[in-house]
Length: 157
Image 1 (cartoon, rainbow, N blue to C red):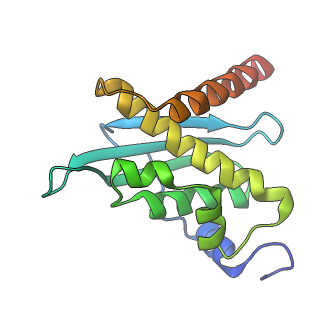
Image 2 (cartoon, rainbow, N blue to C red):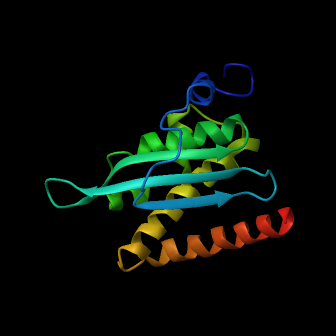
């Protein structure tokens, strides 16, 4: 750990985030937030077909309002998702983010879950706009994330 709290990798991803910014004309956008800490993440996907005809994430960007860990985990999830097929991206989880970042303090683990939620929300939106059958697990996650967003909106309006 760099400063006793964050790993060198977390500090690097916070100071020099990868794939930061809003995407013009994304295929899908996912938003996730946490009422307890106030973090809010938006993740944008550009989905294309590869040479095998599989849909994959050609590009991914993020915008995050939050702490150093929230920004680092958002950046990390974009690094993990880029180039993955939709099926591979659905398998990503918070452990993948934590491993890429060399760990997170226990009090910041929720940031990795929030980043995964933003990715899954973007994937959910992709399934909806593409008229594809939505996997049940993705629908369940969407309901939880949507409920959290409603609570945030009620709290901040």
